[in-house]
Length: 177
Image (cartoon, rainbow, N blue to C red; front, side):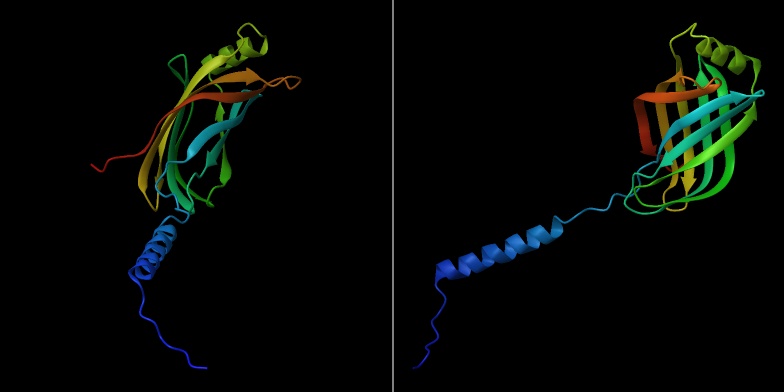
């Protein structure tokens, strides 16, 4: 029995070319690693105990690679007044697609005590807040964020408050100067 080599037909050559292009296209359509997105920073909880305002910020890395934060600037305002602020050098490594919490404790000022007291007494249903700032990362430099939301009292836990974000805005990398 002898085997004879046959010359490829134009249809066979075209099918091979289409298969090669399809394989190349599928390889480039693989999972894309997200990089350079600002973290989503929210307020995991807040408490007012013994004239100390404690805020737990949840910092979520939305990237597919680790984020190494070197500095933070976070300001929370209520009715245009600064409610709490954190600014300074911080070394915080956050794994890909994960989050960490940052606790900030400050003496409560009169405005914070008054506003949170009215919320706790149910004189107002919620407090509208704005959270804005930026982080400096080793990988991407300064990344800005801005959110709006509401504070609510935690039922059965006097002096404790939770938040809900209603609008995330301006999550972007800062332009270099």
